[in-house]
Image (cartoon, rainbow, N blue to C red; front, side, top):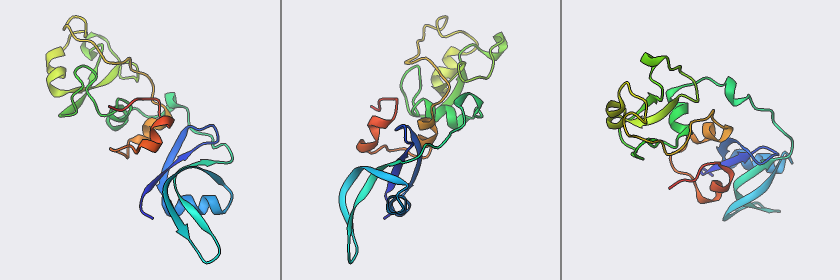
Length: 168
């Protein structure tokens, strides 16, 4: 009953992660439907329910637009999958401005990326092209799934199809 369960909106976009107990309550009340299980069964005297791994809400839940969400270090790291966007490292992560603030760069979703400390120092006050560096992907405002992943370091295989990124 302690395993996390992915909760999807009616449009199949990630909304939240909840406990198995909460997911079962959603299923029993008819507020969600079972999408994927982990193979186990929860049994009572009169019924048995598959242990959920992914559930989908029956009604649409309106989420705040990504552009209006507050930019934070944690959100940038989650959006970029906790990987340096220049070398792919997962150690000593920082946030880097693509166009440095000393050159008029702003702190917005399209201008900040996750960078390891070594790459950030190497790039310095240069543009990535001037430092001979390239990014693995272009920065963007985060999707709702990025915020869901901010609380999870390990993503179960059953959840992967519902997120936009591909984990290595």
